[in-house]
Image 1: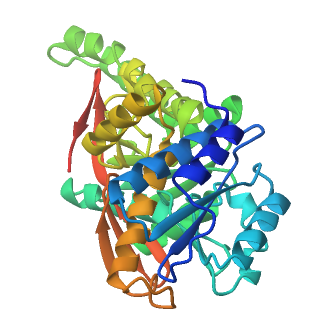
Image 2: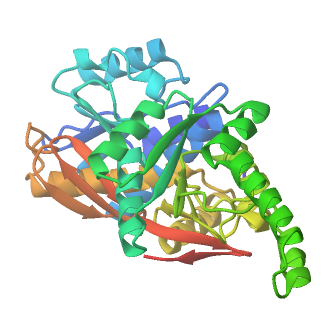
Length: 382
């Protein structure tokens, strides 16, 4: 079902979101998303999920006011200013981290942004995405469950590397070595060769083959046959590897590891949240590979419900938006529907469709589940 978002917003604002409400108890929540332009599909999905959540809550005190940011920082500030004048002090959004600049001027307003970046944000912005800190807390738990003591952490030279560094520090992950790699394939392979001592292990094998050939050992032929089946010889020095990457870049790293004779049969492969990307099923040589994520069972329920209502698939931000509407309502209930400094500062927990939120000092962390990709399925570990 194709939706003309501009006409749809007008209709919904009249039916579901009345523009003028006299009751003093009404809570207005701004919804900041791109309802036009390049990222319109994201905005539509975010808005649709907010509607589902609002219908579930079924409380006239909550009034959501959607505004089109067009994915632009100046347009975001323009829309925020208009809503601020109307008395709005809680906002869901903006969607993108780049649209947060300038929001600090609205000091008594709170912005539950869908970004997963938490560093250098304005003080009144609460990052609500699945941030690196939440993910590394889960990886730390997985590490402890498996008694990993020699973890290699591979971090791409991308703009989020500082987020990863901070997350490792705060989670107290045991990392034997942290290595930064280039995403350009030829450079990447050479760097992976170096970090895994590929040339040394390859030379070890050649030396061992020569030694056995020149020896008088029993079962010499059998030993040579086994050695010739191998690509390298020797320990790489790690029991697990965390690859802080996604999509094709992640697959490039696992391919380079396999090329250097490092497979998940030798050490455990771990990545960041993959949102149950089924293209990983095709990478059989890289399996099993494990990752932290939201609750898969609940995510499937949400996707099914969304599909039935809109005949379309939601994006990942839709699940977060759905939970944020519920979270705001829950916190308002806890605070007698009063918006003040305590609402996001007081320590609290909220169980949403994505899992458990921890709220404290205007920060949100997610208690994530952990999954492993094996053959054609996602297996829950915890």
